[in-house]
Image (cartoon, rainbow, N blue to C red; front, side, top):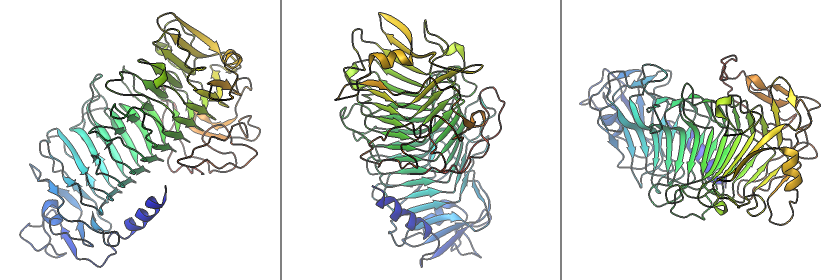
Length: 535
């Protein structure tokens, strides 16, 4: 599964080191020039049109302004040994403020491959009109790395002048692309439920990698993975991204209805998400999931203004099912609403086979305004079922095992009211973890269950949870308290002791994270980056 990724990382290091031609553009150049270092062209369109396999276009520093912009459409491909590169001139920052109405800047079309876009800065100014986005990757084996994408907005509650996506991985031909080490900021419109703007979108593509990027102020989602044109997006990896101070969802995965029983096998791993739905009065979440067979592991979702994760089966004719997902070794802490919310709207069978294990659900439901009708304010997990008489645990093999589930207000509260169960239209009730485990204790066979969850240990001994450091201190009851989760697609996580630890960080195996971004009350410092995730 990872061989393709290793090979493409080698290709990226070759950008600018091949034996092809070198061309240049500069803000004071002229498109009638030959594109040499001493006689550069002026526009990205003119410079990129010269490129063939192995060539590099160097963009000199300064601001490029063309209005309206002319979209560059690829008409050639590189190769694995000779990619086509568009990159910044060493030590300089080219800024592209060249947005015209309803146009992209770079469009790598279907069938074209091995293009690398490296080190550019896209920043439309305040006077530019609203547009669809910046880069479209419709081909395969292409990369965007070390770039900055920054829309203009007047303030934190106003719309950006980017209406769609900064980068769109588009259609079922868009496979094996890499988006890494970029910064994305200010995309879309945050106003109301019909908001726009997904900083990075994968529509139908397979085997794409989005890693080590930074996101803030994305209107609908920071990262959207969605079935759109008849294909379903499979085997994509979303890894080690930092998402903070944003308007919409952190990571949004929508399967659609094309193939309701197909597993997607996407991997969501090692992402840090905080301050989701900042300054807004409607619900956006760290992870909004409407799809089958994905793995979510070693993510940290904390101090958000809404839910941690929503696994939802709803509007079957539009969105589709949510089955067979693995949610393990994550942290959900200090969020305004539930740590995790499972919602069934059409049929309980379409939210089944879920494994929720080795996670931390703690100190959630911070804001009492997010309580469900009749519930306690000490809630970590919520189950909402629109079908009376349907038992989603015993009948549909959803399993909640070896998690740390514990409320905190002025102190850690053992076996308090931590689970909310609503069976519409008949009843809603809050339960203790011990009650759930007494009812659904049998994990043998294919039945659903609640088993071996920790709820009565007091302080879990995180290092500094308020600042986003959820490493475990010596003597933590979460060390060696997990179970092995069989991830047949992405491989099992390694561990150091007699069993996996609970949470995102294996005790003794990782370096301390740096300070974190502010929680909803604004009392903590800046965002964590560079967290080491062991596998």
